[in-house]
Image (cartoon, rainbow, N blue to C red; front, side, top):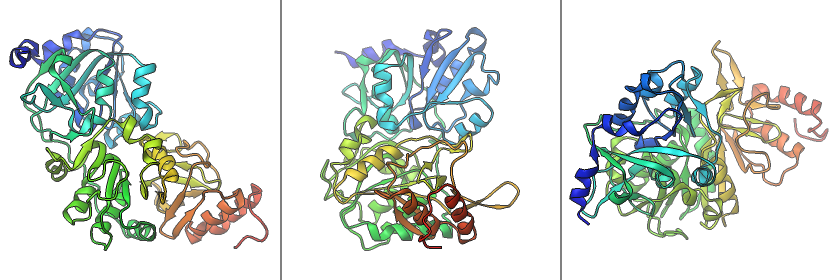
Length: 444
């Protein structure tokens, strides 16, 4: 097999490659760093020739040109499995349709139910064996391109080449077209400066994390803060098993804390499916044999997670009601993000020997009119339930951490009132009484 000749035979300009897209097709952009910027622009340039082309993506930082060029959605209809901040703004404008999911099921959805006429994904330059790395899009890319009628890879010279794991690359023989061109710098996703409330929440989690724990951090300032604080702690030999790798793990590595020594699966190697962060993260991941990238149907499989001893999952949420239901993806009916891997890791960490799962939130927020509002609600009124009350483990605010597993409705109400902001506790008790989930002997 002459891979150099095969490469030249499959090489196209972006404009030539997207000629394969027809009206009515389903096109897939995969996820995160896999966003094909050159192909997206070339496809947008064909707007007047096409109608009703449906496009799927996942945690894209944008701008997505097929969306920006078509505010009436007559030519392109964009969908996201999990909204980034950019995709959230598109949703607010009616330009992004959310697809409900849990991460470990995304590729099986493609395998059993979904059509992919054309898959487009950014990859690293080809190696001497004929393989392109999916880089930070490994989590879903292989499963999507395996189902596609036509596969186009866009070579992004800036992407880190990640190591296996498995399912992290594609051979040139599996590719229909190859596109090259200059790319802008990789997206820089900075979690910002943690607040004093973030620090107080993190302090409530620390007593539950033992030496040798394997960690999953969700997106957000508070989980990343926990990583930074752990890097400065006395804990040792921590591990990584997470759907999304962020700069927090670089902090742990640089402090000598991330050894993966005691992991019961892939000992000595951190496991992830995707990556978003800063250049510091991307440089660390490049050709790093200490980090294995795998498909999310493996990484996020609760059965796999449950086999890891001392699995600790830390995620943020938006609201909790007194029944213990958790919303992490909407405020009212407004789509904010998505279910992602939260429920996967709740289930998995709960089954782990010594495992724990934490859902964290500030007790209050300030609304657009400058008024303080409680994030612990009597009951939901339109908020999307991300994690059902039957699966919720620890809930943490700046006022404490409570374990809801196995607790009755009145016990949950009492515990959640205890970690609510003091200003709202009496009102929450009154609502709990009205809903018949408050005992007269409960604490006030």
